[in-house]
Length: 198
Image (cartoon, rainbow, N blue to C red):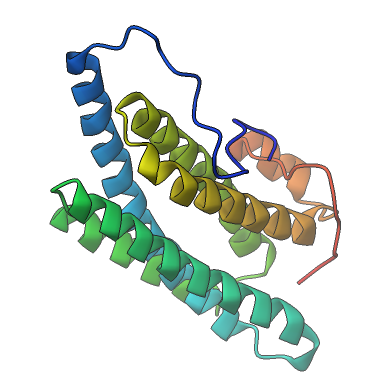
């Protein structure tokens, strides 16, 4: 949306007229590396979001709970799509990364039951911003490697992750801790809708 314009699902990255077979092979390897990281990252995100929506049991938070639950489902869907791409590329997940990301996701999902709401929402927005960049990077490598068939899927994932980032950002846009967190951790929600607090 506000980054590399692949949101229409058809616009490939600017082609390099003189890309060599060696460069295409390197881009394919880089694509696999990005997708492996994304695959495990989606596992962490899904588990963290599951903990987050389960911690929102009050009826006044029913709308936020339902939305975060829907976002969790979209993370699982992205994991399936990335897994399919990895299989097609003759690769798969890295076991050590899967264990690490599973642990991280479960840990942060558990924290949602004992902490306040700002931290989990800020972390979720920051994570989604990183996911957008990751899928954009994957699209660049796919385009340079001649794997244009992946561009529509990657474009859909960029658009969805961008929507997630905007949603989480809108929930914390007016929180008094946001300026400090942004200075220290480097992410600030994009200007736009401000739904209010969770």
